[in-house]
Length: 236
Length: 291
Image (tube, chains in turn red, blue):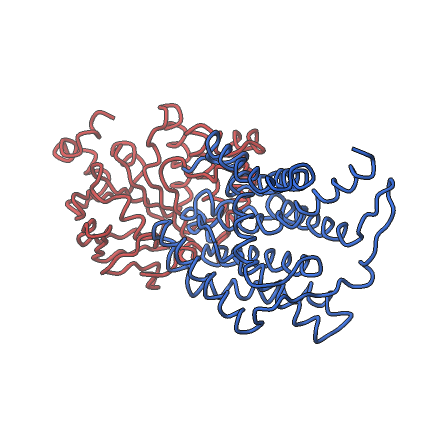
């Protein structure tokens, strides 16, 4: 599934957060959206899934204009959004969380419950535990498992490594490698640029709501200028 | 206390608690999902009762049973209109705005009711099958009280099954936890909210029909019940259905025994209890602190 974002402007109240972001994620591609805290990465994701509708510009999935469409309809077209932070349904058990994943129409059947539980064996053990009691890493598994169960045609990962221990980040890398091997279309935002660029094909660097650079992951990885700009990235 | 008066009081407690529970459960369910205290919930209760008196007058003997099915549905439809036309626009506003809007709705519905049904006290006869008493442990237990308790028990079981056993109920709980994530997983959140509001209204309408044969159906019953149900929900913890059940029982006990022992102080005890709970556990016995 191809995602095309064209010149979107998004506001929070009066604050003009996105000032004309354009980007593209081609079918089967993994694209990283990089930038410092507050650059507009999360807002871009929220605009794409319709949680904060852009005032101007268009978002297209394949050739359908989804700008301003309600979030649940966008989700049903095969877009799975994995937000950052502790966003599992806290009062539901792990199993109930997984059960609420809705499969998009025409989505391939690649991720069955069995396969999700095989990939994240911890979720099997924690089946009856309330999601609110899970650790950050376990919640990340649950959010990812929930997204995969919907058999997404495009997966949006917002800051997946945020707040995770190095061991879990390594696990996350393994899962991203699987997704990449299966040519899942992925848009990933990260402050940890080196992590994201390890799995991405291309990357965009955004600053103050605008795209500053766009290049292949390979060249972004090697550009010392980019690494200096991102600051945090080089130390990761 | 003799055996017979223990039984009489027990039935009294359970009957009072049952009516309160059905109203408070809807109020608390709506608060849980919509984060909105709906004062007009009392109107739904009153309309359930008024509509039943009208239907019963038209249909005679079978009127009560028809009302029991039809009136809650009509009130649920009222709930859908209120949610879609008014409340949906207010979810992003502050609590006070919402509270005032629902209070305005209560006043509007009260005026419409006055126009439709007048000021006089109306009533409805219980169906013959539910009339009379039966003897139990020396006490004469009204059959109708058992019916009220039975309906409330069915409502409680139904709500429990819905919320903990069905995917729809899980979605309702997920709305409370994280509406954005739920929408991003393909659930039509506004539809769920309308559904929850309609269910709450339906429960209020149902209790209105159920109490109609036992209590005077008249202007003012809307405000009266909303105060009582609100106290129950606050004591039990807004948003908690178990809390609504326990809160109803506590109020049932205080009201019934208070009326026996110190009639003039009965309602004082209830308010004192609410103040006590608010002082010690502001989020109620089974509620959760606001996130």
